[in-house]
Figure 1 (cartoon, rainbow, N blue to C red):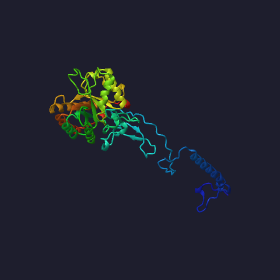
Figure 2 (figure 1 turned 45 degrees about the vertical axis):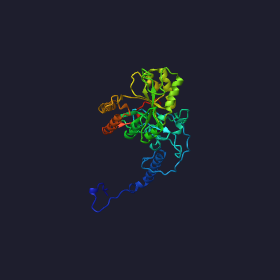
Figure 3 (figure 1 turned 90 degrees about the vertical axis):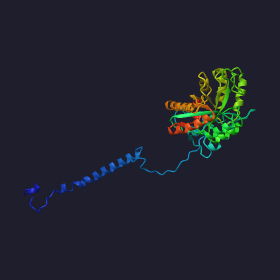
Length: 383
């Protein structure tokens, strides 16, 4: 019989017949195929188990593990922090407050100062008792009056203007008016010859003002031109000048810096000025130069002795006229927009207080931030 080879040649209704060996051949290949599948699965499982990371991302896989609490580590004594004076806030590490379990607390340097509610109260750790009264001193933990008594500010990088109005304490009415009318961002300077300085200091601090103490320094043509009692002079001995300086420093507390009152001659003497700066650096207070003398050695001596330093760009009330004062304040605004900061100094005359109060309100609307003097001082301990 002839074997049918093709489907088309096979009669309808008859199924093809395969040889018995070929019909069931796949059964003999089954065990081999199954074995290969097992090998592949085992290899894949081993690959997954040995991988350092699972195929799924950590965000998708939620793993519940018991929380491990590390033992508290000893907290190192804080070192002086560093921060650029023209930039934004920097990071400061301070001693952890009680109850924070040894964690490192990070704070904004612009908020290191006293709470406003207690700003009028001296910090006991920053006071040294003396025969003439309380003297500012660095605390045992390194804190300085310059930092603790500073008024907080935004820390922003915009144009900033600092204004110091001095002569407070000499006139009771004028002092009360200046403290009450001037915006709290204005720094107030107290004259050591003033009366009731402790009371006025507390009133100023309650209103939010940062304060500085004015130091009478020898001008040219002294004593015909006389800054007042206990003036520091070039011809005096170091001990005498130190005694007079400490008398001035003890007149009140809670100030961040001292500012010269006159001193065109004194500020040119490296010996006299250097001895004063060494004392200020030891006590942790700053120095503000009103900018009246181009020959002043204050910048380099402040840097040498680690004293925070600020120099005035303009005396705003050399002419006691409202229009002239406003022009000077506008000049400060231009300087601040060009350089980032500007510093002005003046006195607590009624016309000055009125002009500064009015200008500050308008300057804020133009994007100028009024800041305390500590916010624009260069600080050798912060870089």
